Image (cartoon, rainbow, N blue to C red; front, side, top):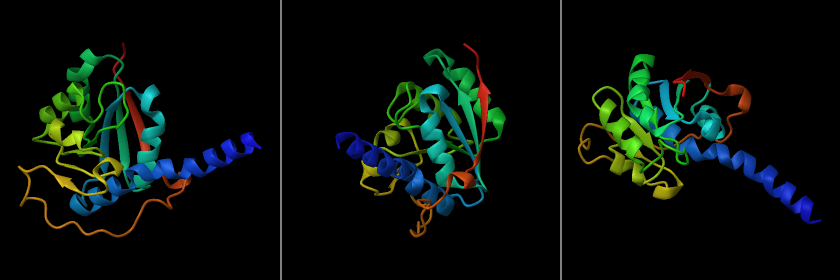
Length: 180
């Protein structure tokens, strides 16, 4: 009986994981409607599931470029690769080994690309990194906006959800390796 309960919990939890990025995806569509190319810098082997959840949330019209970073000292190369990819938005992975909301590497990247690419996060700590906005469970689904951007970002209207997006209708994911 216990194994049935665990299996039942896993089956129910799987669709909820994809919802982690749904508020962020909806907000990015409202705030930056012309920006459909998302950039992610992470250890892809560590954050692959989170990237797939982001792809499900942003939907099939979007594209994701992942810069696969394996060492903390690759942040400079990752920044250059991200800029070269043409990504229009940088999304911080909340649980990545290196580039997560609140980490030094996230601050380095967010500030390094700030003039070209807005950074988005799902946790309050993303605001300390210099993110343009953050929304997610950690923010109690309240939209946090960088105080330097207030007045630039217009009103955000809610509505819609990526929760019903199926795995077949995900954004495409391209991985750029940095080597080791």
